[in-house]
Image 1 (cartoon, one colour):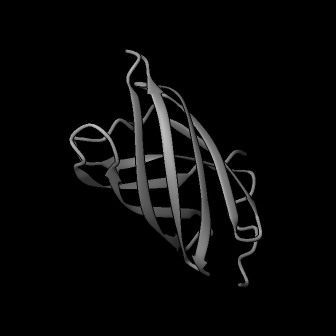
Image 2 (tube, helix red, strand yellow):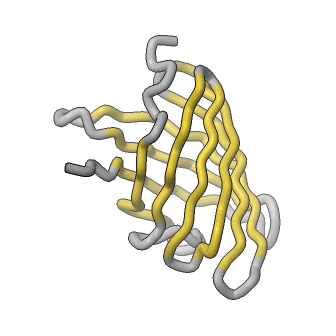
Length: 118
């Protein structure tokens, strides 16, 4: 795999999410990557605190499991398959298909965009 640490020390924010998702424009994701292993923490909006663990599947895709606690005290758990897109300006976009593993078990689609700090 050539993109061994593409996601390391990257920050992402929500571009779009289906209505049944908890993530919104106020949520920030702080990704780390070592080889195939991906970890992240996230917070903001209705998410009090969250964590992610996953692995790269190919150079441009990965799978994760996520869990978070909402500001109202609800524990949410899910899984996600993500496609990595590199935009013209080398900004990373993550296109996600996910499913809740508790609650209503519904599925959703979301997109995250890299936050570029100047």
